[in-house]
Image (cartoon, rainbow, N blue to C red):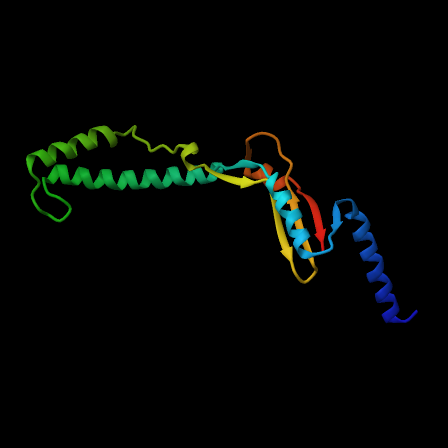
Length: 171
């Protein structure tokens, strides 16, 4: 067998395997317009799901440390302002300003003061369609995907682990 014949045979065999594996989800249409109409009908049945992205423990810890560093720097500056009676530029502070600065110190700068991070505030929620389609003019095909998930909400990790079901609209 010549090298070209081997390549052609291997290519034909791979096409046969590919077409057999996806034949149940492949529909042939007479025109591009018919395929587009099928796509529209497919997408009409799309649901929505909220994909939640939560920060990792490391991200929360890093943010807490950053906030703690900022708090310490602010407290150091305010302590200096109260003890000297002058602002950061060296101008004298009025009595009312000194009282407010002392209140800030009392409320936020005790030795037990720590900054906190609300994990829920750092989480993001994205509304995602459970069906989508891509058009490929070169191969005369529309490839549609459906993610079959339960419930109204899913974690990003679960969403990414969910394998879509493929539908092929050829024309």
